[in-house]
Length: 186
Image (cartoon, rainbow, N blue to C red; front, side, top):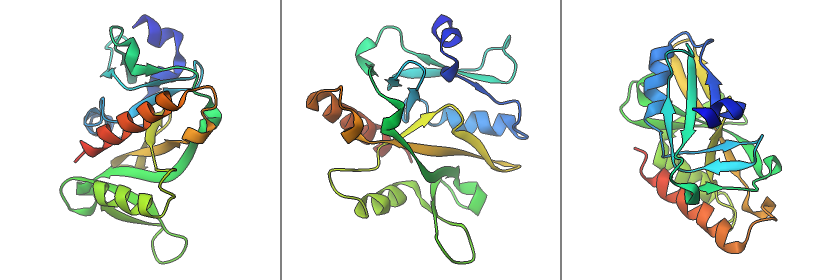
């Protein structure tokens, strides 16, 4: 846990959660499926474990796999990340099974529309240029409560055009790994 104690972006506080156990169970379903970004070191982790140390009550620690250096991307500036306004929520929030994406509306009765996750990702990407897909990642603060009983994951997206220090091959690799992992989420 040495890296996590040096990198505060990898230690997430769960103290404010009213339904902490539900949040833990929810986020565990995304372990190694959503990449995690650390702005303090400019790294994107694609291979990690989520750990809940007993001595660090009410903390979630992201532990990058120390034997998989090739699964960590370096030199990622925070300016390459943008908040999307999209959230992943459990389907039971809407009385349904599975995982849903909440897509914000500009008008109407509700502030967002829930759609099954994979359908929502497809719809969002249909409205984006093909060379600028939504590439969701997580960072500290993205595990939130939608309301007092519902955990959610706010998504950030990485903009490959802003990765000026990375080669085309590295950018393509980031796009591929994020796309492949997202396809595995149900």
